[in-house]
Length: 379
Ligand code: EPU
Image (cartoon, rainbow, N blue to C red; front, side, top):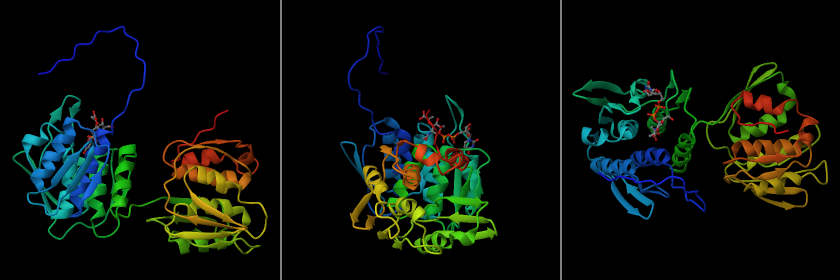
């Protein structure tokens, strides 16, 4: 066995490079089981658990080519839907192949992970979730045997406690299940978001947000509601003062022109532009009320949006990944659009001059934090 010999007391200086995250890499590798097409993953760290997962995938039927942190995997056919004890005992994350295998091949035989240095690592929540998706599960000789002869079907699943690999396992199973799955009390670690991003790139439709807006007059928002519905969001009037808004898949771009009431309010144009940066396609947004109300376009572009201004029109090419940046709020509604953009951006955004927002939005950060946003005010 190798040893490290460390002499202390020497100050550390200079650049130090990070590697890709193991706990993002493992579910990404397992996700390659969901398709017969090749998947290329970059910045996969060269660590033992990753090598073990790759060996497991090869046993199952994958061809794996590794080249300098770039891994190309293709599982044309699942030859043997099994994770043997010899591999599972050294890497407990092997339970991550359970969901994808039963979803793709209709059956899986995966050794129970057993205990480890940080305590017992049960997978009862993975199993209960898979049963809800329609798998039949048995345990014998230290193995979990799962079958789904009729395939899996979507279900509403609530984890009784948050589990990272359990959430990942079920998301992977659910993307091949018939119909919709809703997972409540899901883990929200960055590695879970990474997996969702990968699955979306592979063609999955992963449930977006679900908000209930209270204390509003739905009728006053009919122009906005019509656009949201045209873009593919589900907007339902729960009662005379409550709206429920859901986006279950990527929205479509929809052109919009501001107009006097009951048209689309100019005061929602900036926020709509932030939305269109995430929609599929190209949206032409026309501002007909004020001359100079596209200040937010430049700031959104700094976050990665693709927006071209032509006179009173903004042409927004959607589905651009926004990244956190330092941005400046220029007016009240522009600031709201930057907050919305920051909520979908990868990483941290610092929005300066929020006094513009405070002119018109009461406790916006508290309201958004109340529905899960990670937002805080700096004095
Ligand atoms: N739990 C259950 N039943 C289940 C699943 C989990 O009771 O079916 C319990 C566990 O016993 C634990 C708690 O729920 O008490 C949380 O466990 P979780 O399932 O979230 O952990 P995990 O998915 O097995 C991952 C990481 C761990 C990391 C934990 C917590 C991977 C491959 N592993 O484990 O990483 O500590 O989440 O963040 O993503 C490490 O890298 O060193 C490591 C241990």
